[in-house]
Length: 483
Image (tube, rainbow, N blue to C red; front, side):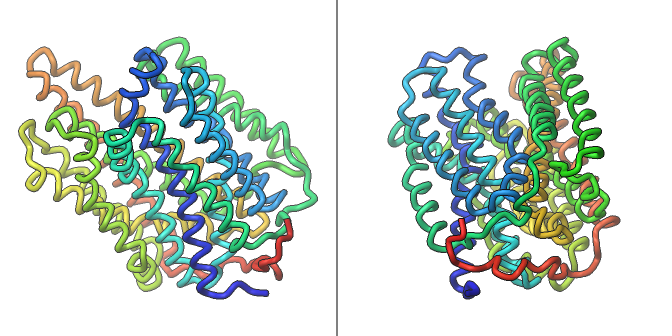
């Protein structure tokens, strides 16, 4: 029995709710870190692991989660991921010891990675008609783009009015609802690559390479980018990546078939995704730092400052972005969106020490809202459009990994650039002026990332509207509980 239209859209909203819950947990914690530090006795150094433990396992397990979805069934892995994430959220919420909280955050990252890696492929199976798929991608993209700013607002509200435990406990009813609705609405099918062997050696080497790279990146500013630890970890990551590539070209059933990267749309979209995620982190984190440390905004005020851009992204995601893609094609829509984002980041370069929201911040927020609203949809469509159904989960994992690594690398590079510039200005400028000068240089680098992404998208991605790609196998949209 084929899933009817209304049921498919409700199923999409369930996937988006799960994705929002996972994306929120990357930023909602930031607001509560001072309270967590005071309650559990974290040091300044160890406190970073409340964030880093999640990023490390999340980024490291995305590819493996995507491939397991192809082998064992996308819905089955999605449910396992959400249940694991929800139980780990409960553990975080009741944590009374530092080590317990950090360990629970690591498990949360594993659950989030598994669910995220297959959610995009589930959505691709639900929507095969080009116009509907473009609209669905837009909504899904808004959750990815707007979830960070929502996390700051929600984190501020929960921490101010309740306590930090609730930033984790709020996930429990949401996770339970997602599990219930997933069992009722999402198609239960066997793995599209069922029967193939799992490439354990490939899984171990790529997961190790990603974890070493993320560990090096998130600690780079603290340890020093030329320190023995950072260079050793990056060298180890590069060595494991080399072993992984050799394995994938020699084993019979590789975890990541290298031929995927011969698909120009797929490989280009992933490179664009890395650069775009780096630019997005420049916007989100550096603008938040400027608002907090230079203008003196509270966490809640910072979240509200991002509200205009989030609302603009929502308007595009609900349908406008899809219509633009169907009318003007993938590359023109993407390039225009990223050009607007570049202009928004470039405007941030002139932020003054005594800036006002309306005159100095809002124009950039509006441009970035339009840019992000237009760009996410075509990036996801380009990445997934030519991929076979048997590798949809893997491709989804690769896309998520690209965004994750781009964001982590971009944040580390931009924070380092800002800190270095601030230090050099401190001798001749006041504290706030030196801080602002550091942010200015980081915004220059972020704008360059976005401009390069826009150029690659305009030159290398298809000019036409997306096709139906590969239709799912008969019975893939059946509602029977096959798993």
